Length: 279
Image 1 (spheres, rainbow, N blue to C red):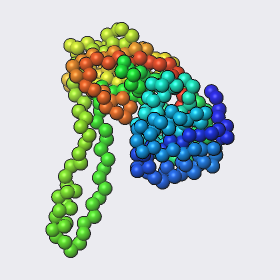
Image 2 (tube, helix red, strand yellow; image 1 turned 180 degrees about the horizontal axis):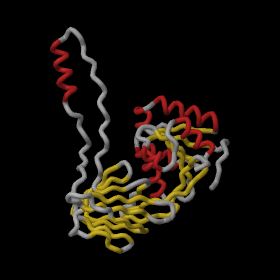
Image 3 (tube, rainbow, N blue to C red; image 1 turned 30 degrees about the vertical axis):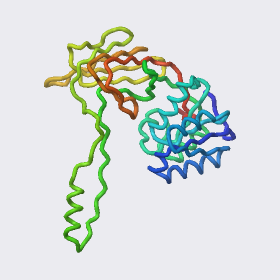
Image 4 (cartoon, rainbow, N blue to C red; image 1 turned 60 degrees about the vertical axis):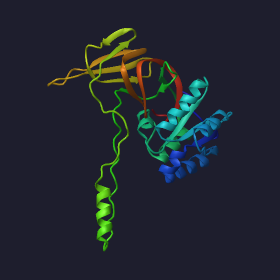
């Protein structure tokens, strides 16, 4: 693994969602990176400016400050430009940190920024589908709903009965959840390296696919259980094809579909992520 010196030049791309979600963590990350390296800051206002900034990075190492969606966006852009092989990405997770942490990036702005400066590049596998989409961490069919964030307590004003009644009414309304179908039985054909793991005659509850680090993806199929929990079917391979009637799937932080057929192939060591040197 290549270790980077703190004198490297960095292109720090700060995702707009991160600035809105947690400005304090963004400020801390900027301070740490600027103190340890020659950092050029870029504040894109949308996906187009994000893409232009990454495309014009020159010899600077790109650092993304943002959530899982921002990281996937950067990897997708570099993959479609066929520039992943020669570019090591760094990320300081702000907002939804689950994807970055699952890949080995430390949680917390200071620790993640220090890993950018003192860490080492690790080559990771990538799932690439037949529409040129990528999966960094995990793929799920059907897409599990995202966890709802607990609502903050609503203060009640004293001395205004009509106001208290209105606030209580609004606070008691359930929060709207994303329009993502909840997990349910589905009829899917799952093939791994051309071998059928489950066919359309066997309803399944979930299918999960996870890229590894050795060019092989792990596949778990949970058949529909009646009464006792069914034993999951496990497989591994370099190619996974799922066929069914208009199914959706969650790839990392985004839901895609509906589609009737999709194939994912493992691209071994396709992208580089800077992680703490001891990992």
